[in-house]
Length: 122
Image (cartoon, rainbow, N blue to C red; front, side):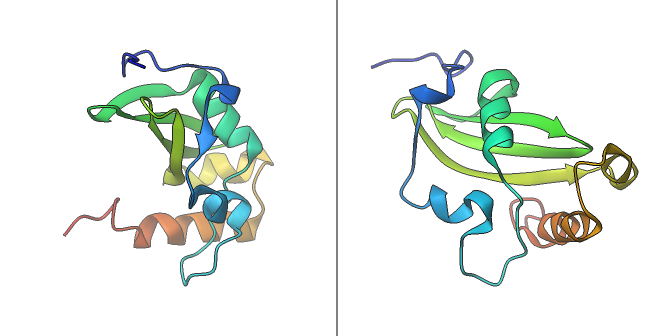
């Protein structure tokens, strides 16, 4: 099935999670990384309304901001698969004011962003 990467399906039910995606979701993974605080609302809104950037042929990034925290959801459009999702930036002042994030979540997200090699290429 061919789908234009610039206009991916915007219905969350059109996608299935990749094999490793559930490990990233709701911080249910076991590695030494800080939590991503990725949840149902973030996944749904990234798919439904996130800005679209073609990362590679067939792969798009869906980007949306939640209470001062911007997330990227990586989607394989051809396979209709959600590969991963993670925070890419934070406006700490806006995050604190939003009431969406606890002090610990803000600290976790800041640490995740600071230590994520995708945000800090060598």
